[in-house]
Image (cartoon, rainbow, N blue to C red; front, side, top):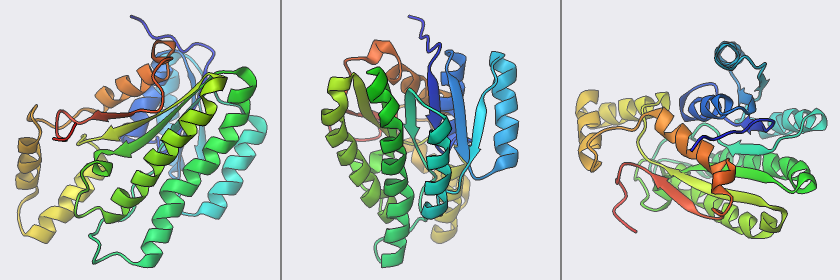
Length: 261
């Protein structure tokens, strides 16, 4: 089975590094023309050059600050005035870590803007073209914490749960236009975000970060942390015609971490 996304245009949020870039890379290698998004222009330029050299296609980047919803709204609206996409990967960086006793009402509002409002706005803008061409793929990158909440990620647990139920609702409404909407529930992967969370956890617990990582691996039946490319393979499959009958589902990719069905 060879996935071809020739002539497809994709917008990938939060994609200058980590899982977002892993998805962008696999989409590009499968023939899609990709636009990667983040607030770090220097890193975006570096990653676009890497993609261009691997695929011999001129990919794009868009500089946006997800933490400033008003600014993001203007930038993404301008982008869609001149661009259309067939594939949308909804992803942003995560909100601050903390349990329910340490985060504030303002923190919840900021997390809502970051994780929910930005995604809904972007999707609404992308849907116009998808409906016109009667084809589209929307993938929401969320977390396994929507099934089994993590104590130190109260904000992420809460708002990502809203994203997954919104995604399911949307999938029912756009399916007749041959547009699929699916949620990927992400487990432990080797990313800068995981390193940051593990570092904070180690300091809080007064232990070495290696101990935190070893404990994390022990919770996963496969006894390892996932590679970003493994996530990219799944997302790329969901964006292909091979996944045309997969719609409105939560797909967990976590090495067996989640114990529930």
